[in-house]
Amino acid sequence: MRPQFTNKEIAQRVFARAAWVMHQSWEENWRHSRLLDEPLIPNHIIMAGRSRAAAEHREHVVPLALIRDQCEKMFSLGANVAAVTKLLERHLKIVMISKAERLRLDFDLGLKVSMPKGWSFDDENADPFARLKAAGIEWDQIESNVA
Image (cartoon, rainbow, N blue to C red; front, side, top):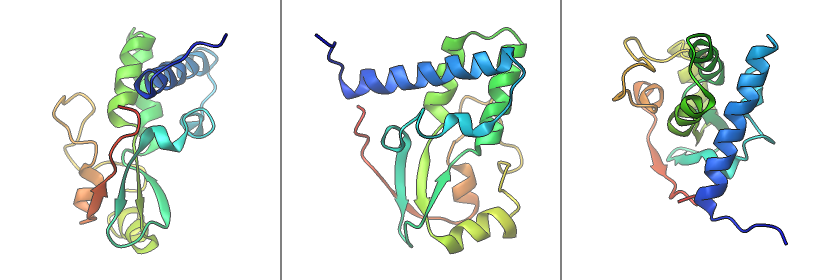
């Protein structure tokens, strides 16, 4: 018989599996930010909100390339998979935004692959949603179905 898991346990397993895959790819010197995307990490696990304007574009609140680079940096400094799992749990989230909001975020503000000035993974109080807030995007939080 197959084991039964709660939604929270499934989410924890998904993040741990993603961290393990990131570690393997780092060891093999193979880089791709989309490793942290579907199907490895299902949208419903990381969906955090929907824009009040429209929900036309799936936006990672912290760009995947930054998360990938931070995972690689952590592994280079000796971090283990458990530490990277925690990073993914905190920063790997999606908010559905409008196409106009995406254009403002990516091109008007130049935040396509960066976070606002002063934001850092090293700051435990850094808000993963700072990029959306800098763009003035208002969204409604989606109650997590993995709690």
